[in-house]
Length: 297
Image (cartoon, rainbow, N blue to C red; front, side):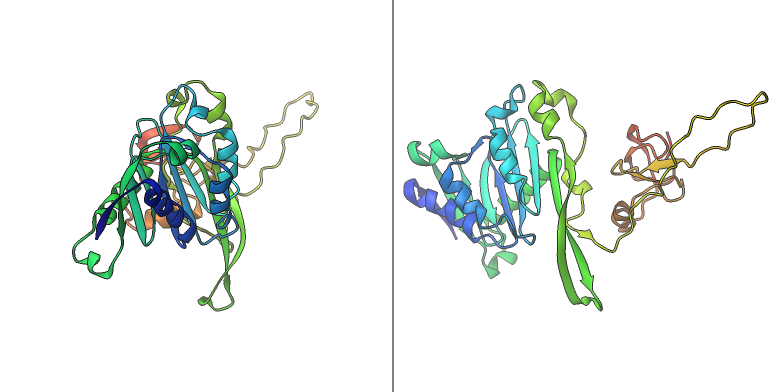
C-alpha cells in the first residue's frame, strides 16, 4: 500500500529508511549535503560490509562540488561496500532499502529537510507484492537501471574468505578494496562530463573472493647494459596484458583475456562475440571492438 506523506512524516520516513537498511541502501538525489544528523544516521552502517550502499547524484557537470561537497564524498568513501555514481541529467529523488522506499521531491540536502515544502509517496514491500508489484518495487527497478547506466566515480568492495568447508561453513570478512576511484579527476576538472571513463556499475562484482588468484606475473625491470663491440640479440621480456572488460593488468594470453572475476562474469553467458571495452595487448579503450573471440585491436 502506497501512502502520500509530507512535512515531518516525510522526513521521518527518509530517516528510517537510512537507519533501518540491512542489505541495500539505494539513494538517488541530484544534490547531497550532509549535516551532523545525517552523518549520525549513516555512521551506523559505516563498518558493515554486508550493507550495499549505492549513491547516485548529478547535475552541475560544470562544477561537481555543487552537487556533492568533496567532504561528503570522502565521508561515503569510508564505507566497506559502496558505489558512487554520477548522472548529469538526474532530477529524480528516491530513498529505498530492502523493505521500504520513498519517491519524493526532496534532495538529500540538510536545508531541504528543515526549510522546504516537500512531499512524497511512501511504500513498503509486502509478500503479496511478488504477485502484483508495488509502486516502490517498480521505482526500485527503475532506479537500479539508472544506477547501472550512470558513470561510476568510486567503487569499494568487501573481501571474504570462505571457511574450511567452503560455502557450507560460511564466509569471513577480511577487508575492503577500492576497485575504482576517479575522485581527483571528478573534482579537479571543470567539465567532467567530457572526460568520462565508461565505467559502469555492472562491471564490478558485488564482493571479492580472498582465495581468487588475480595477480599478474611480475615483470623484471630492464637493466641498461654496456653494449659490446658486437651487439647480441636481446631476449624479449615478459609481456603483460590487460583485461578486456575492466582494463586491469593481467598475464598476456589471448585465449584468456579476462581477469578471474571478469571471466566468471563472462562465463555466465559465454558469448564469444560480446563487445568489451579494452584491448588485451595495449590496454587502450576499444569502444566495443574487442571480444573473447577478438581480444586485440
